[in-house]
Image (cartoon, rainbow, N blue to C red; front, side, top):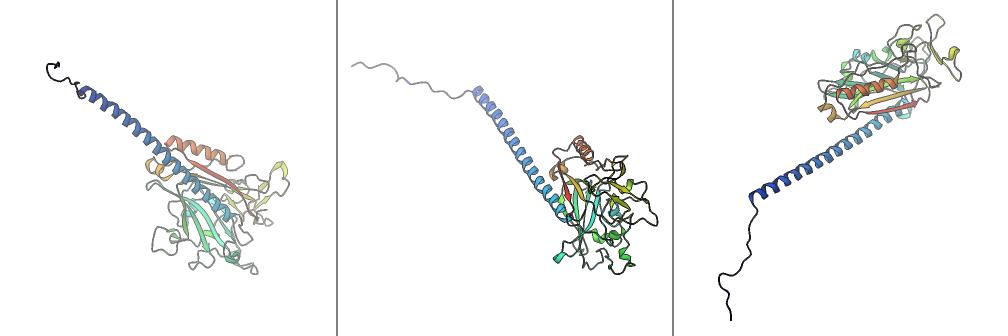
Amino acid sequence: MTVSGGASEHRTRRGFSLIEMLVSMAVLSVLMVFLMEAMSTVTRVYIDTDSRTRSDEKGRAVIELISREVTPAAIDTRMQFIILPGEKLSDAGAVNVVETSPAMLWMAPLGPGGDLRCVGYFLTGSPDLKKYRLKRIFIKNDNPDGYFPKVGKVENAGDAGNRTSPTDASWFTDAWDEQAFDDASETNDKVIISTVSDGVVAFWIRALDSMGNPVPQLSSAKAHPKSDLFYNSAAYFYMADGESFDEGKTFVYLKKNRLTMKANRLPAAVELAIVMIDEDNINRGPVVPAQENVVDSETGELDMDSSINDYRERLKSAGFSGPRVFRTTVKITNGV
């Protein structure tokens, strides 16, 4: 029998070299970076999508709420429907009102059994706090603090409540004060406003006549007594019904004389638009630019398309991404 000489044969086993380990770690690190970047991108897309979805839901809800409450707006010789500059609510005690944004005030049968309610919407903004909110006014006719506008009795034509103004909003605002608008105080039980939605940075309202044309802003009227309101149902005007006036006009303001009577007419419809930015974008972004309104110098009409487009460009230039615009036209039932 032959016996092999020397030690038994063994395969040589060796570990990874230092260079191989370093290369492996480098490759793994690169893969981890790519993976983390991919996860970060997916997370950002999810957050942005979720934010846009929430903004869409809030925006649609805001438009639907205003539409539902303005549709049954009521009018007679004792009441008004007004679109006014936001600064007029500042004069009445409201805080942080966006003065370049309009407000809207009206009466509507929204209570039990068709009881009247005073309703309104306006925009507030605080660049320091980075809070932008659409506010709602809602006053019952049994308000104990006297904030509900005084509706005079029909049989008493001399009642001061019948004297709605063709030039101002005092019928609504004279009885309001700072407490009426102080919703920040937990102890204030006189407040008549609430927050409809955060993140609303612009708000436009435009009245339309019975022919579907934009109503010229009252503040731009040359013949009418001077007013800073945009629309006033108690102003002196004619609105066309079915056929236009001379020169194709469908709405005309009148001079005041002893024969001129207040129109006491609702617009046939109102066009509404809001611009929303999600709160995270507002908090990490620069100062939100102020709303501006493009008004045709010849007709006195608000150019809503240009106003919205210009504002979106200004938001983009300021570094805000993904502003959402919600817009609708609401027919007023009694606005014929």
